Length: 556
Image 1: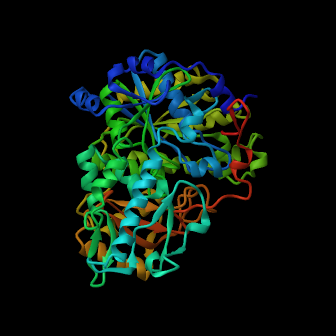
Image 2 (image 1 turned 90 degrees about the vertical axis):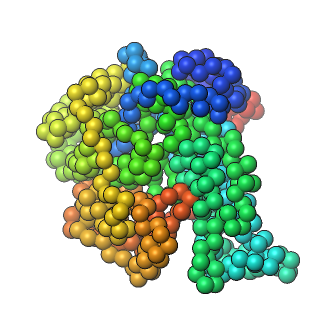
Image 3 (image 1 turned 120 degrees about the horizontal axis):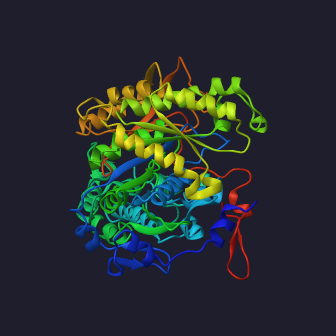
């Protein structure tokens, strides 16, 4: 069996200029990065802003398991299938991070015969967006420490610097570091921290900014520290905005690539705050909507994380109105949720399926709470039996959502036609009444309680003394009307990764809260979530190599 990278390397790619033509994009509207990738010009983005918008389809999934779900693979295959059926379709996806690519998994390129290419570029340096974000983030950090070194005119309390440095790599030893050691000229000694680039506020700012003017406004609002008397210090106060914007000038432009079947794909932005937003930028989504009849996009991890943030944060701030949601599951993953060990998932087990399908049930209910029609798709495996498939099909029909089997991994767009037809039928026959699940004016604690009880299924929320104090301070500073960005394990609906299925009788514990004023949300940290992951015992990096001809192997 061919690996994902082998399939991608053997594919016949078209010059990106040809892909652009399919979407109504001229050569002069592109800034070329080699033969197969390009950025869209600011002039072009302005030119299409008056175009009629297409339909927006969100792809999300049940909580991830070691058995796999296949969200991106489904997104790509669905986009290819819609094009095969004659519908002008553009896919909008996030960029992957180097950290996970070299650590625990591949990037956001899909898999099998439903992939985005060039796969190696996408998983590695791509067009340099993440490197620009890293540089802008660390420039701000350098300016803060230099301000203190040069007299500290603003009166920054070095014990209350909240801005962290970043790196696009999993490296646990950088979570907590001491900087400024050495001579007097080496700066003030203080404790510092690193986050992975995709967890930085700059990433969130880039993802949510509508244009350069909006980007600079958001950068200016970033809170980097507090003074001795408790006043917030911003990026604007340390005069960082212009130079940061200069570094991000090209990064803010969406990137254009293609699928194996030559469907246009806009790839831009990524997950932010390490809370599995896992969606592309507002600019990418908006651009795609102005170019196509149908836009397929996705949100990361389970629907309790990615879809919730897409629906409560991104759609709210960007004025997006999703028309349908595709919820991805596998029979293997559902049986895993029902207590079956990973080694036994290939054996028919209807009892375990009945136990584990409650995870899917909760995610269906969650999306329906937002007023968005749901289509459930099973990512097909050879080990799935007709009885198991039929059980899931009937389960979905009983809950007023459509069902389709997806075979896109093995068959590409052809294997996604059943799903595409169900999506089109849903769009034509079921109206979306999308609305966020809480209003802006609700208190921060009530917003957190709403997400915890309505989406996770918790009984209540408990707060540490620190978190309570932080939420009160954030409200006092005038940020109480912002949406909440919940940081929680992806492996469970609860904040305990070991509780599979549909946990009952639990509370969510919020241990810390902080405001990302530039991004425009308040982050609530639950459980043991970290913003700088470590590497596993056997990192993916062990299997990655390049031969003498420059051919990369081992990426997946």
